Amino acid sequence: MQAAITPDEQLAAQTKLALRRLASAVAVVSCRYGDMRHAMTATAVNAMSMNPPSMIVCVNRATTFHGAISTAKRFAINILHRSQIEISMGCGGKTRGEDRFGHGAWSVGIYGEVDPLIYVDGKYTCLPPDAMPASTLQTEIEILRQLAM
Image 1 (cartoon, rainbow, N blue to C red):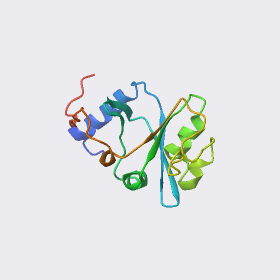
Image 2 (tube, one colour; image 1 turned 135 degrees about the vertical axis):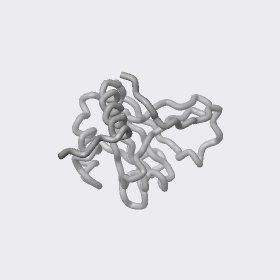
Image 3 (tube, helix red, strand yellow; image 1 turned 120 degrees about the horizontal axis):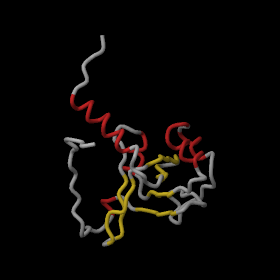
């Protein structure tokens, strides 16, 4: 007998279904922590403010990448071109660790601390939030309670 689906599980399933219809650019976020390079495919990357110019990247706290980006001095956001599916797949979980850098032409960032891709549609070197001046934008996080489809 199958276990009953809770309302939270049902909401999560409906949210995933709805988000599959949301078109967005695919990015790979990369950083260095110590001698190790880290990279993660991210679709939750957006412009946040123009004063100061800033972007927001959402990272699951349970991932190894979260630990790396949380302590890195800088990180890079690489907006991928549609021809770069191998990079997206590799950094999205198909490969692990240093193997994620096996596809694409990676370079040392202008500060020597991050590894942005050379050929991408957009490339940004970023500072973590605690290293940035205060923004004119106040960020509010709201937990999704209901999804109307």
